[in-house]
Image (cartoon, rainbow, N blue to C red; front, top):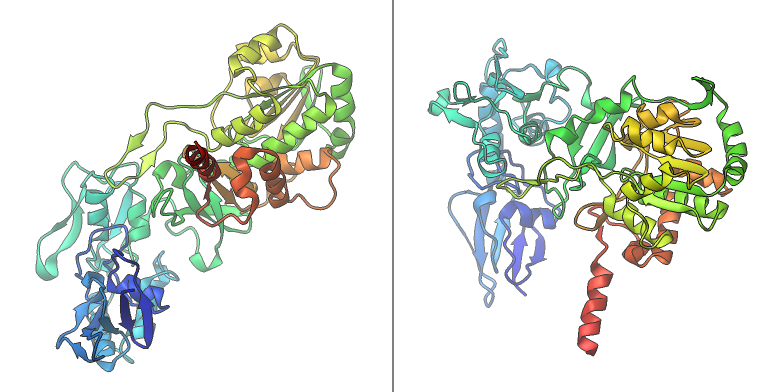
Length: 543
């Protein structure tokens, strides 16, 4: 087994594995500071912050020969016998010199910089910088330059070139470039070609200092007040892993959460800036009951107490499942509707689509399917109602008055139904709609229940590649709004607090498609096709 030696640590390398010095040191639990290197971008080795001593060790004699000069760890491939020294006095002096040089021309405006609290220049200065400043403090300047989707604070830039490489290698749009040379070089765009692409917000995440600022987040919140929760973007079937960052139950920012098998290090702008919907004043609120032509508020407990009896009295029930529901919510909804009537009809609501999948040179995909959980909800629905009707066929049946009571478990973020479809549903004696925003069908409903947004819900989603991921609740829903999971949990008479992990275990035990989710779900999610592929391979082997 190939081995490398980093300070006092020995690490083993897998055959054919390609690591650089930063990655190998991280495996040994050692941080090598860096600015320009990023695992998702090409290597340029320009910041010189990752300089280390490099050598080789003879496997037979154990003799170590070190190179006379320091080398950038980001551009040093690790092979059998490689030796790195990251904590020597020589390395410490080099790091301190790099920090000092960067701060000579960097404005001291941390108190008004959005990056304060998560700035590598700040952190590295205190960890690796000089003990005291040897140069005079200059009055700071914060020249601002509008680049398009983001704002550049020119004097804060340390010329790591991450943003330039991103637009060339990942988005493939190449808007950003380096103008001039030497001490005069700066990041800029060409005239009439601003930074404007569906992934542009990622350059703000990439910037290790406060040079690139998000116009949406600028001066709105200090990062040390924010609390983050692991989530899943619900705007398309890619299902990007995200961080939802909030303070006092208000979402201020969404950032990508690294997931090499889904979205890598990136998210699209649509997902990044979708959070205002969580606090949209147009959202439905509480529980409303139809009284004549008006909708009046009612007590949620009274609704839960009486609704099962009303459904039984209405006749054959039907359930519409939104592809925005979590796996757990869809399962509990089906269990409840079937507890009322084994013949209850179940269908999946409309699947929103926009054009075709959009693929970028770096491998990122924006799916044309604009919902997070079609596969998961369809599997749940087909388990309870094999070969069930399409939504169009179901609407025809509803228009013929075949259903006595209809429950629409919505959660759509865009308009999804028209007046004609709503009138067909209105043929039922009882119509209950749970949704985020008003719609023609909520206007016609006997009861309207305000749903919870994605940041207010915890549960699991299955993306377009059959990968199940779990999301945590980041904020509490408005007073009176309830996630569908807690609602059906209570309707089923289950005791204690709503437990989506317990529900997912029940789903995995009952439905073969979800069997791989019976254990702990990794942060990167789990491919639900694993067991099916194993079954196919086993069958082929037996044959």
